[in-house]
Length: 470
Image 1 (cartoon, rainbow, N blue to C red):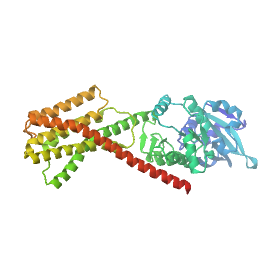
Image 2 (image 1 turned 45 degrees about the horizontal axis):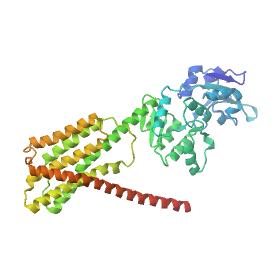
Image 3 (image 1 turned 90 degrees about the vertical axis):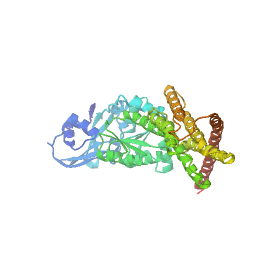
Image 4 (image 1 turned 30 degrees about the vertical axis):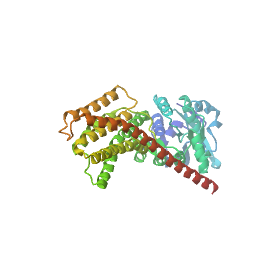
């Protein structure tokens, strides 16, 4: 954008062209090469490339060392000490300092190169999306925190004024955790400091980090999910779980939504599959204990699995579902599966006892257990389809009609007897009772889980108290 020359005797453009190299390829290097080019007409005797630790590159020309990078790391001065830089700082421009060794081992500031980072049009929308989703965003950067703060101010980002410089981070880890939560912008950060901030944030949050440079590798590895830009260095991409090939983080909302759709839909349909696992396990044990044959024929289980589970779960898994993923995935899945699976077993046990007491043939009542098992599975389908819409209503009605219609029309295929008044009455009574049994078992499940959680939390509190006393 501009240059501010403090030493009028130097040839700034020629110096910068000789400091530039073809190998350097970060965004700052590319901007400088585009502006000043690359030359080799001066006597360059040594080069030390830019590193995140020292925040500058060193080029020795005619036995004089030239420093290009962050003023605070090259000298003992701050950018705010130069009034001519104020207007650029307020605009969020980056300020690169060119300095050299002078007499008495002092560093002479020669010039400032003003660079503007172009804000992507989608940046504001992306940041707002994550704020709406309850995600805390932290900017951890190697740039001056004031510069980063002013860029965020242009985006009207909340907390843009809560910044801290890397050298001011507390050494105590507990204090670091507190600062990591409070601050939004972390500037002039070294790779190790980035890693420590990520580690502190992980104490009570799930953390994802986006980076593209060598200086981001430690942070990317420390984060729960490392996200690298496709234009970044290979090492950063290798250390990350996700690589954005477009180098545009505006695609992250789509990634989050896709992840939510998969997890939410799996959680929704997993309980339907686990019903069969639950009652199959319990029925196997029951058959062994009672020395009784397994109550289902394979063709009957195929009907239940296909119509009541397979077809609806296929369509539900494809449905958009972008609500925030909740914790306790397994607990919530089993809350649906266990009560329903246990109820299926209770139904079969009642039918077996009925046949034994009244001397009835179990074959005549297979229709009852098949119909009730399908009813319970369809009842769960109704539960997980809430809130109902037109599409879910159609799916629910189609599966319900198809299941009972196949039982009525093709009893011989599914090895069941035909519907009669007694079987219909049996199904109606047990089906009515089943709804109350399932509700009771769900409440019992919630009570047990809450009790277990209470015990676990109580133990955690006792451990915390012991640690405090220690």
